[in-house]
Amino acid sequence: MEVINNIKTKLNEMTPLQKKLGHFIVDHIDNVAFMSISELAQLNGVSDATVFKFTKLIGYEGYMDFTKDVQKKPPQQTPNISRNQTHRQDVLPRKDNGKRDQKTGIFLSKPFRRGYRQMRG
Image 1 (cartoon, rainbow, N blue to C red):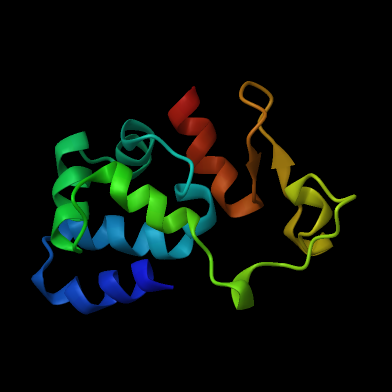
Image 2 (image 1 turned 30 degrees about the horizontal axis):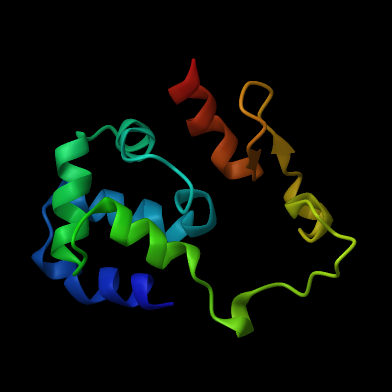
């Protein structure tokens, strides 16, 4: 995925907070695709401005441009989904133990839920 390659290429030029943000994005790319800039910033303990500057550093015009690119997945990385499968939980491996957030209905993988719940309160 181009986003991940952009992040890895620019890692040496990043501040410590930007590196932390970059590692988070690489580890949680599917969840980041549909987050607001404020949600991503809050989960990582950085400001919205840090997230914006990060997206500029890795070659995007801004956060919206970045999320649009993250939402694009090459065919080889997209899971095979039949027309009858409408929820992400239908295509995840069972060992992931993913669940939907009670407040928002967003599907979250087990490792991601802790940080998301802390952010939401």
